[in-house]
Length: 631
Image: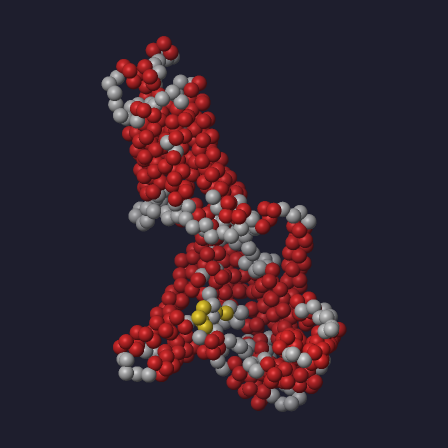
């Protein structure tokens, strides 16, 4: 037992000893046993806290070398875990930051600055945070000096948190949110961290006052809060979700900036300036035309005729390297490390999309635009789509897998008869359409239920987006129905040559330069009685750029094939064109005629095919363009 009569207060000891700038705290003054043991436990817990924080940010437990400056704080709240999608992360980050900032200050106050230095260095070596390390060193040094060892330890510790408060303020980074509530949410973790720091300081100092600042006062409180923080993260978010966001979602096509639609004109001008500087005697228009050829050859024809000075090859290498990294270093890493996780289905989906990714050749040639598309599968991606179908048959992404495999099926022939596998494709499409309808109904029901419970926070926090969004699911259903109609019996005969033409037509890629030539080639081979004639004529008409000529050709298709799928598609394409023509026309009588004609076309579509995508699209056009009679 310790004789309380022999215990001295901080003031007594300071008057008994010579004045020192950095003095010992109450725990060392009490001459308790076990100081080093409990201090070591706290140090181990603090190292674990830094490891956990680094793990959340980078997915790495321990790292030697690399950057010791974590950057600004707001980007850490948006990636890999976005606090607007996972609100629990706000509390997790706040508790972690509160422990990081309060524990070293308490150690310096209860012991001295020399006991706190290993905690400060722990933030540098385990947490890779140099700026916070320097701020905490200032706080620990301040709270250890003699002038700050006055009677109210709580006030002294709270004042010494000022460097951390400045760190949260100056190192938050740019807040680009326009909504005032979302703007405030991005600062909420630091306000909450300060509040939690004050609570931790108050609890520890209050309990320490009653137990005479024994060395074990901090360890159980620290361990309890740290354990609760880790459990909160595990059950509300989880490391699997963190890895998915960091390794898969960040590598999805929509998130990779290199794969976004963009104009190449700035690069063309940059390359033109370089070449003119080297060869000023050449005509700039000729040089620019050669540069455009280099870009087309690089991305479309893949020839070796590209000039070594062209920036196109550099851009192509950059894009391909980014795709390889996204699949190999990101998505495959998640798949290999989380084999039994349901999120593997989404990872395989993004992997297959990146495998199917191609350059839009027509956009590059006609508009100097570098665009990418993913909706035409290639044979190389077939094993990935097949794996999705086999392992995750009930997942939403399996709907896309069924459509892709159905698209690929007609290319193969049955080994016994040599006939195309139309039946296998139609079976996959039937399953896909049924699943797609159920998924759309399920999401619509959920959305209506959420609308019945309006909340202001609903526009701030939202769940993570699914791999297939609602719009993508609707677009997928149209693709499924279009292919189902194309492969239907009305577009087929008993002629093997006609089956081959149907396969060729179904596999046309509208983004490639030879698209129009391929359509005309099929048209030349097809007799007038071929059931594909309406589809072929429609495909050619949609390539016409002049709106007047396009309207003329679509009207002719409707006249010749009013009840066939090509004629109905022509009505859907013609109605918006007529509405656009009405907006450009200054004559009231003509406006009335165009209005009535567009109404007639849309109503015909709805009446003829009420249960297909034709009717849904017609109703959508009517809803987007309310048709009222002109006064």
